[in-house]
View 1: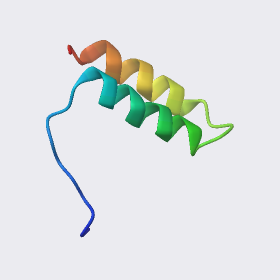
View 2: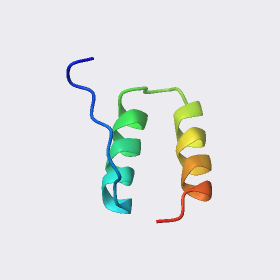
View 3: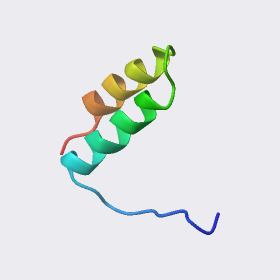
View 4: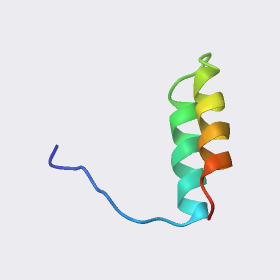
Length: 44
């Protein structure tokens, strides 16, 4: 875990990360659902 980064982020960075996770899991709509749910509970 040498490349692990934990930080407080802004909405733009958060969306970029979620878009990346959706992109690397093609055909798995659960990641879209995860993104939507995370954004609902995250107030940025």
